[in-house]
Amino acid sequence: MNKFQPVDFQDLDDLFAFLPEHELKIVEALRNLVYECIPQVKEKLSYNVPFFRLRKTVCFIWTGAVPWGGTFEGVQFGFTYGHLLTDENGYLAAEKRKFVRTKTFKSLKEIDFDQLRILLFEAAEIDAQKR
Figure 1 (cartoon, rainbow, N blue to C red):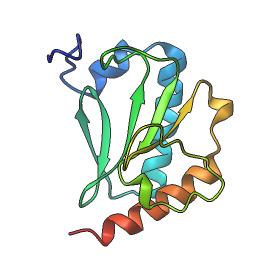
Figure 2 (cartoon, rainbow, N blue to C red):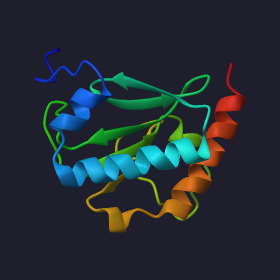
Figure 3 (cartoon, rainbow, N blue to C red):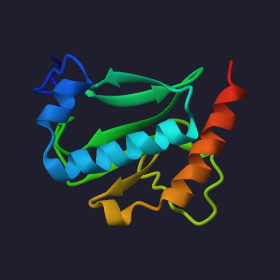
């Protein structure tokens, strides 16, 4: 446990048991999409949420129920090198971050799976060029 998070999950099952059902459904859909697009990805629990990596960390799923100084509503899907992605229609939000780009979903209906597929494939290509 750290000073920013009052929770400390031992594994993904602990996280999933903690999540409210509506967030769990979104997390499951997003995880399935990541594995569909990047089957060789490795998943690791960091900061008490799932991060996915190839050579480097490609993306993460941050749920509003898992605090980091506070909580928010929904589930955030983030790209760690999002600033390198082609996002001409502004689907992802930069907020005040230099590299990371995210999209927050409050329901399954809000997820644009086709758009996320395009971004995941591109993120995997960018990762392949990293050393």
